Length: 503
Ligand code: GDG
Picture 1 (cartoon, rainbow, N blue to C red):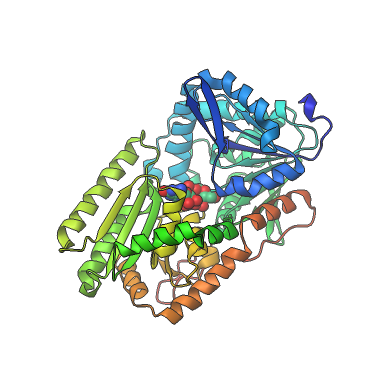
Picture 2 (tube, rainbow, N blue to C red):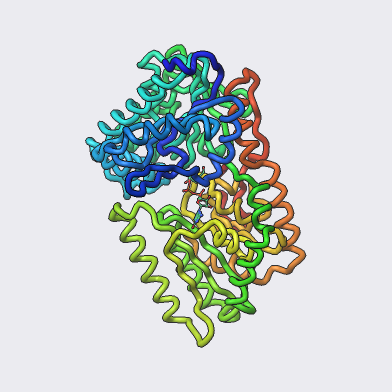
């Protein structure tokens, strides 16, 4: 164990696939700057106050590892907490990250098993790399540190740590959905993954449905495990270990989004965006390029709305931002081609002089641009076919400081569990229903918009990212079970058949 850590105790060790910083090399000089995600914003103060270390891959090739290690050991004091990099070889990256994580776990856990490539060599790499993360963690920690491991890339790390005789308390949070038993059993390594998850002390999910799926998988595949429920938690006894499973819906730094949305810079950018699209409502879609985000169905729904509701023509504009992602994977390339074909078909069918129905943007927006769109759009159209949470929905709400926006939200986004009362809910596969919701949002009067948005803002403000961190860490250290509020059962709309879905 690390000598310089001996004097401190009870620190927080975060382990995730990537470090929360961006490295930049200019000639001889290697530098890094903090990343901008909500997770790092929320965890940084805790890491600083309590002392802590973040362990993850640097994003750079192995040849840079010495330079990265040197830079990180020199800068640990300046950032208030230390960073430690796990070296990954090009083969690790291909087979563990692109392979097992992105070609198996990502599609399977989003219910898209037909997208999976169950290549056995990926499993070997996944085990090997999870072990590498465990070795780096072991060499970094102190006896009484709490270790919090994040996401689907690292589901075996606790089991490796236990094999390495690490006895520290171990927490895990899954950012993506956990699939139902019918889907999970298709994973050739289902027993190993489930066993490994039972090596943690606390396992956190985004929604009740994810937790329920996990518990059902354990009951079905590992009948020797004793499962009981206690308050909001399920407790599983397995080989002398007791694992608690709970629900912790992740959120955003509401105050920071709201503050920045009110700034002069964002107000100006919002004004210019609308000035360029006068007398019409802006419908905003913002997604990473990913087949889980339901972009082709959304475009078809938009076309359906323009066909069935001619009054919408020239009165609405869809701004669809697609952020490039995982471009090396062929499925993602095909998706981009499909999106661009649909955009050009729809623009070809409906464009009139002075009106283009879809503004398509394929690039990463600056934070200022993103907030400008959030603030100015009258309608957010968020229709993933499956999503762990969907932070874009919460960010849109936080930035809607004029209280005049309408959120159209997929029934299959985790966010629906908290936002279902005041968003317009849609089944993203039902393009006519999404078209109807667009029409309804367009027609909604200001009073109804204000009431709905006011309540949505109150929910996101109350249950922000700080509350999430507090809830997870509270549950991890306390023998008292922490019951996270605001988890609603999702009831499908009255006129829909009862799907028996609870989220
Ligand atoms: C995983 C789960 C879960 C997007 N475009 C731009 C941009 N963004 C930022 C947004 C938001 C983030 O990216 C996307 O967050 P999501 O939650 O929508 O999705 P994933 O990246 O898939 O994340 C997801 C999440 O983990 C947290 O647990 O909600 O379900 O899949 O923060 O603001 N940021 C900038 N320019 C862009 O163009 N600057």
